[in-house]
Image (cartoon, rainbow, N blue to C red; front, side, top):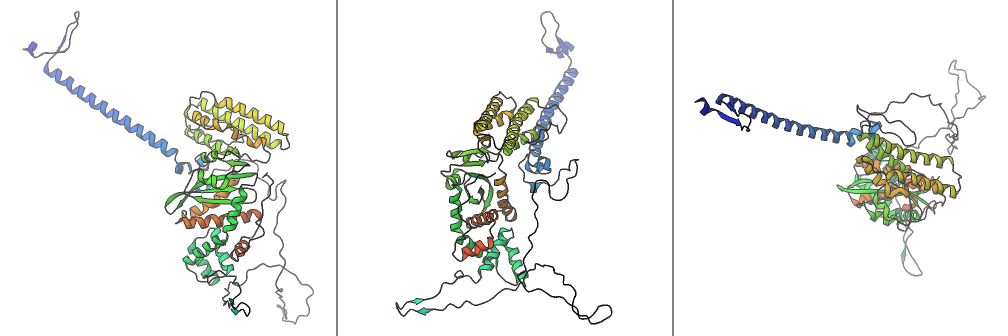
Length: 508
């Protein structure tokens, strides 16, 4: 009976005996096998959950909100400084002396010249004993600058009409105020100026009502803004044409929502003007529209649409290249490092450093840093020497980029820099060309402020108005002109004389 119920679990070889089990042992082994299979299934599920958790952690630690939590990593993630919530503690160093620094000329407020009758303060009797006082023995003077009483001027414009005795036509003088607008030029210019300062339409309405006693509606504010943009149209088109004639232009672009759709704000800045262009395209259309046929030097980031401009020399922003390295360093758990100062790599968590990746980043920074220091230390170098330095730096960088990098980030950055090697050292052979694009990013910041305040524009007409007003406003700041005077002159139909041809000198 026992032999019949026994089960042969493993077949035996010729020289080995088979193993037989009774039903109780067979049942126990089956249970253990089922339990092992269940544990293996649970183990696979746990490994899958761990993999998803690691992917999610990697996504969070490299996302914009996480990088924005500290200014140590904000620049590495491309986050503007306004998104930084945790400031980096100041390093221990000697305190900077107060007052004007060495090498900088002093600057103080210009003493104003009085244009109103003086306010005379006098006494008839002594405050202590009440004795009548005579003539003062001394007069002290202080110059006070104050605003006039904020009372609006409300007046009628009487337009006389005549019948010409010669041609029998009805004639009348030209009215200096826009048609169908019940507001004067000063009020319209002030509203446009407040808009350029970043005030929203409801705040401008409250400012005029509470500060000046002028009641306007939000629609009236928008109409004033549009009227000023239409009047400044010729100035805007003239500034766009001037961009193609200057020797150096800085270009940049950023996202800008218009009517709930994704748009793009472009900026083209040079020594004497700034041109803004808001368009739905983020491709080559705007580049061709503004810079078609440009033969100077264009300082830019690595945005591909600029490559269509083959008639100009390109200078790639080296700070942009350093941001690529900083982002990769953050992924490799290395504290992001600057470009101009040699800093030893510091790991942000336990583990072994990535030797190959650090060798790549150190090599790229060393070459770029050396060329920048040489260019700043030899401003009067000859053209021949500049070409030799540029050729030597490009050869060293080419040798570094052509190495067979196994690290994915090093290989990716090398692949991006390889076709742009000639764009990295244009500032060496072209005196006056900067190695960074800080000028365009500074001007772009003004457009970003409008994006932060209102989230963009509700319509493309609003974007059309903004690009014209912002262009003239920032150009006035560059040329030292009064924006209110320029807008008032344009509303009267006159061309402001300060908007002539820009200087041909390169930017230093």
